[in-house]
Image (cartoon, rainbow, N blue to C red; front, side, top):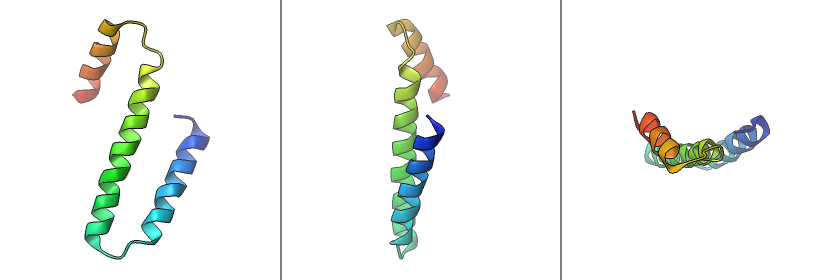
Length: 64
């Protein structure tokens, strides 16, 4: 992920965090943020993949 995009994403979630009032809301935002970030990183990693076999290997290495 490019540095600028990472900063924008961080700012986005910090702004959302400012509006929360309970621990459960913070936990829910954290889960949303983790899923969003990991999905974005997975798409970045897959951009350079040439074959399905390489993609499968990368998926296995990410899962472990």
